[in-house]
Amino acid sequence: MVKVVTYEELKENSTKKSLYVLIHGQVYDVTKFIDEHPGGDDVILAEAAKDATQAFEDVGHSDEARELLPGLLVGEFEKDGELKLASKSSSSGASVSDAVEQGSNLMYFVPLTLLGAYFAWRFYGA
Ligand code: HEM
Image (tube, rainbow, N blue to C red; front, side, top):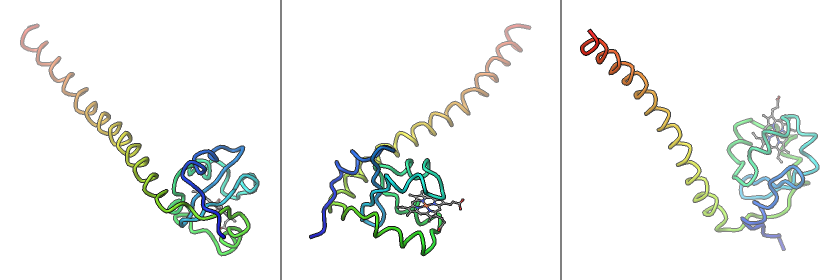
């Protein structure tokens, strides 16, 4: 029987002390491996409690890297785990875009305020 790893377990193991990563629906325990990871520990830690598939694939990991995976396997990620992750990341995604939104509002706000101040000075000051 393949062990099923729940979303809660994935979240619980999201620190350097105990770290799981989710790649292609499979959960790997990288706690011992992380110090040996040629790409460094921070990139893997950044994928903790998330679906690391895209990050893993974007790097273009070699066949040797892929051959390490079975040795680190904990089990399969629970079926609706992806859904839980999706709803979690969409809310954090929203906060990222909120921040960007705020940034771009500020981008207009600052020059507009300066422009307003200039006209106030130009017409009322003179
Ligand atoms: C259990 C999962 C992982 C294993 C076994 C693994 C293994 C490896 C190995 C063996 C290399 C050396 C190059 C190669 O053979 O392709 C490597 C490089 C690298 N890995 Fe991973 N990796 C894992 C997860 C990740 C994750 C989640 C990221 C997140 C972005 C990542 C980012 C990188 C980067 C950026 C390099 C390039 C280092 C360089 O060329 O300077 N890896 N990885």
